[in-house]
Amino acid sequence: MKEIFHTLLYVPIFNLFIGLYNLIPDIGVVIILLTLAIKFALYPQQKKAIAAQKSLSDLQPKMQHLKEKYKDDQQKVAQETMKLYKEHKVNPLGSCLPMIIQLPVLLALYWVLRDGLNGGGFDNLYSFVSKPETINSMFLGFLDLKSPQISLAILAAGAQYFQAKMFSQKKAPTQAGGGSKDEDMAAMMNKNMTYIMPLITLFIGFSLPGGLLLYWFVSTLFTLIQQKVMFKEDGKGGPKGGDVVEGSVVG
Image 1 (cartoon, helix red, strand yellow):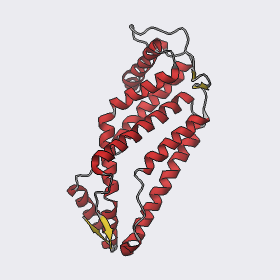
Image 2 (cartoon, rainbow, N blue to C red; image 1 turned 90 degrees about the vertical axis):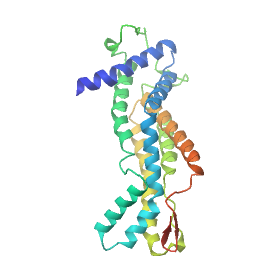
Image 3 (cartoon, rainbow, N blue to C red; image 1 turned 180 degrees about the horizontal axis):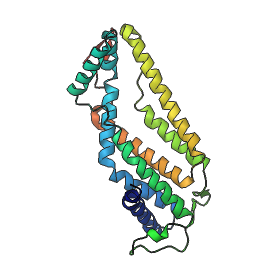
Image 4 (tube, rainbow, N blue to C red; image 1 turned 135 degrees about the horizontal axis):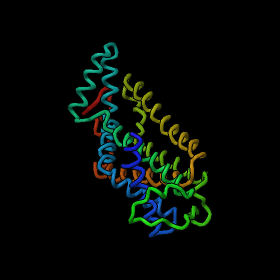
């Protein structure tokens, strides 16, 4: 498994990294271009994941209504929920695949940046990729991407906050009856996650090299823009799952 990871991910990314640096001797620009290349390569999977996550978000009012309607029969709730997924052609696991795919890519990029910025890993270069004499780790003249950068950690956390906020569930209207209590709880949980995940990103970011944080920020920003475009194409970004009125859902 380690050899497969090394051959299929680390070596190609490392060669792309060095090849770009040979053309553009600015490590920050290289990381940005490398990030965009990875994001475009994963674009189809990411698009499916965003669509699945949006569909799940849109179905929340109906799902909360089912929980209220069959609150004494959890088996019925599960059956009706699966039926709801089937009717709306929603895969509840559809948003997980790109994250699973991106994790080994993120690990490979971490080792690429670690080795490249510290002058190692050059024995993995393809014959047609020349070895640079040195690699300057400075970006914009003052950011050392070999060291942790608080500013980039803040940017990465901020981008993740706005990305998560797009999927946060709105508070249920007061006229929605008893079912609104569950929806309020779900909205509160979503709101907490909107803040917790960026804080985790910020905390972890304090110990990561600036190059990886730059990748994290650009990658999240790209996904945020992709979400906005998809939501706009989806039609005004409004929920498809129906509106909550007088404790019921109007589909």
